[in-house]
Length: 231
Ligand SMILES: Cc1cc2nc3c(=O)[nH]c(=O)nc-3n(C[C@H](O)[C@H](O)[C@H](O)COP(=O)(O)O)c2cc1C
Image (cartoon, rainbow, N blue to C red; front, side, top):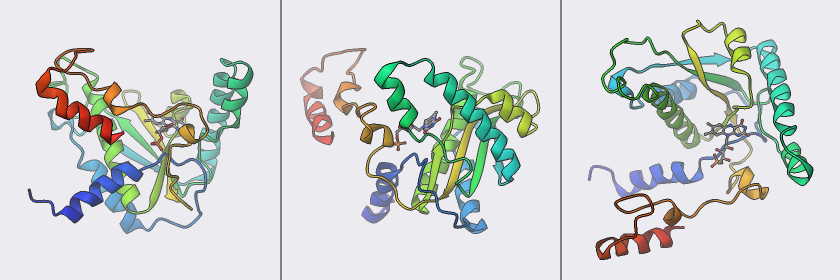
């Protein structure tokens, strides 16, 4: 065990207090040294066949961000039209992006040609390329949390607009559009949980033993008990 208790607790603290932040961004600039540390953490993510298929496009330009924000408005409207009644009003009342308010936007992309076409481990499951980019996003998100920097992932967007605004080459896929900046606070619960949109599932309801919906044999009982306690 080469982590001290304090170091381990620090990692778990980042994991348990990480939040998707859409509101309460402050205009305070994130220093370059901090941004660099956060990007370094992202770049240290695991990747299929060590392909490191990500790029990070930093966007401060307000005109570009406005165009992305317009795409959000259009996509949000489209999503809203899929709902009816109270669910629609609830959806419409949610704050779902901080594109203009955050200090910087970061688009994380996937390049399937990086070190390709043969990438160890990607030959059977091509999606592992995009999974790798998501690992980088999670590293970025956790590192940012430890720096007191908020991150909000916006997926209510048209990828075509992102491609065009950011001049992505045709073979590069946008994976995550992130709003990044200091925030007034990190809420104790996900906004969607606090708003009553969806509840957090119990850990014990998503862990199975030996097979899908497998009932635990006696050997698993202590772990099952510990999972229930962890909720
Ligand atoms: C792939 C992905 C896409 C997401 N897209 C959006 C989005 O468009 N708008 C938004 O407000 N939150 C978005 N989120 C944030 C989730 O709503 C949030 O992670 C979830 O409600 C749990 O809250 P927490 O991240 O604070 O724990 C996205 C998260 C992920 C992982």
